[in-house]
Image (tube, rainbow, N blue to C red; front, side, top):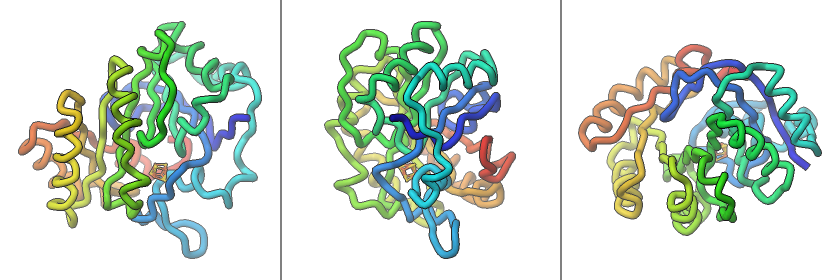
Length: 244
Ligand code: SF4
């Protein structure tokens, strides 16, 4: 069974390598982390990441259940025929072993649509089909600023597996201006392990003012270390509104 928080679009991809590309999104529900360090407030007294609706099981009654990929495909096609299909979450790779998840991905890859999976990169998946090489893995690796313990947020074997198999994978990191030294130390250690993988730095924030605040240091770090800067366009424009 596939649990989905929201299917939406067309809108523009807000971050990463294809920022600005007109896209449709499937946001899968459930995650293997909670990332309370990102401190987005919700509910009465909770905090988490900006996708808390897809992560916290208090919202599970609002998640849609799909047992057929065809029904998801039909919804996406009714929204737009754009070539950019973004599979996000939550953590969508929790569903990797489900035949209907594979059917969904394969359908769009075979149509030569650009399929991006946004993942935290911690799940060791089986990659053995030629068509799977065409999937773009946008790996949002979590650092200490997520408040997740290192053994949960960094799985070098899982990362190496994805990076070695996919033709077009990149990593992205959230930068908090208050924690630059520790953050860069972690990122540079990861770069040593994966020197050929593109790295994008993105400003922390779930509203436009906070993103603006952290963006100056983030740009400076990208310039200093030769990384890419990625804005978070959806938050600049819509302040973490759903279905954006
Ligand atoms: S891994 Fe991503 S979706 Fe999961 S809790 Fe952390 S930021 Fe949210």
